[in-house]
Length: 270
Image (tube, rainbow, N blue to C red):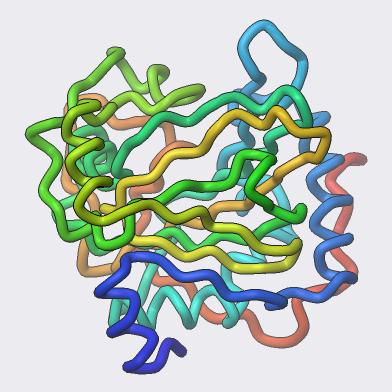
């Protein structure tokens, strides 16, 4: 569980990086599972533009027993519950593999603006708790954040650049005005969230963030779990996004009992 000092630091900065959280054996198991998931032709698999390279896999906690267990692992779940000071459910899970030389940009945005406008999320009481599957360095498309920007109000400077839920599959649908970004960065600076495979990257749903293209020869894969406070369940909206994009089931997640790595039933034969 997140301590009071962790919560205080997070409230000030809006992000944190914890190194060496998952073992090499666990990371290797994640990679094997991702290799299999990437071959499944489903709506939840999104490819890079005009490419056969996977850009995103959504709802991996539903399609993979291993990642369903990982979402409930106390190393992630307790951190989310401690920072939000509430029980949580999984609003969304997303695997973002930025392949070497292929991974495209994700533009500057705040997640909560998307979740509020498109999903009916009442308050920014949600959090990203993410696992690095590869080493993430300054060259292979790390997340850039503006420290403390979760305390800034940027919704009035954020415009929708596409329509419909499909507009958010390959790119940020709600993009922040460049002048507002410049002003925010001038005041608060920038940071990159880097860490070896098995690190945990945590950031507030309102922090201003993006990621650059991966022009390096090294892959950069991150598995994102977006936890929402149970007391912050989504309100009805006219055109809700698909279940695999935004869960409307606010039942609290129960902590995983026992080890993370067990004999996971292979779904390839199902």
